[in-house]
Length: 317
Image 1 (tube, rainbow, N blue to C red):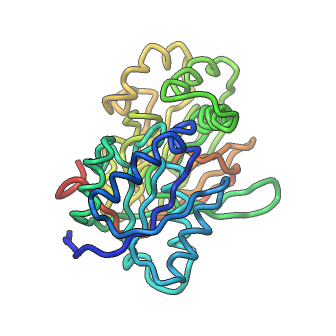
Image 2: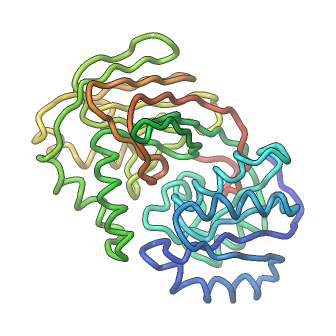
């Protein structure tokens, strides 16, 4: 943990964050930044993937402090821009956020308030924490790709719900409750997928899989705590999987998604390791930090303490 001196920030502003809340609230945030004498430049994203390019280019232009004005998806893109460039070590870049997203789950983990003025004060204080990142290798049709993430990746049912929520967002619809709507609305059209999971080279699970999460942090889906034991700087990936079980059982215990007690159910298994490999008889789809990607086979690996983030406290909960 360290507290650094104030320096110039580069703001990556996503106007579509929070179902276009970014468009509505950016003028207010801009005025607050100016009133608080924050030294910054900014650029507005124009579409999916643009924040990756902006983050990388800002570093090439000498910027060492990047702040996302957006949500978990924009933060994920900024991370991928930071990790993808080769000019400086990723841990030398400071990454912050003013939360304007729908779920804001990473901010929840690190005590970054949703109040804009308070979030700006935290940015100015610039108390930082070195957290782990994850990297997942996956397939998009026949092409093998990879993606970094800093919060939670989801597979199976979790990825289906994220995809439906994202499609709604792309139409300018939805909101904080849309994820929960799809959690229940899509339940009985989903089928279990036969899956084999290896943790650090040892087979940990084989059978029908309903849903699965791999976490650096604890929260996803707008406050769900599906990986409650995740520690963001322990050099390990935390895994929670829901096995093949009655879907009515899933409905019955839905509230346990929010307090972390889901992991105590007999239909749930948890693992922890540095490398997770997943194969399946059918395509097991993937999302990372809420962004819909490709499908299995999947390989996850942890990159210890490589991302310097601005937090709202001395340490995450």
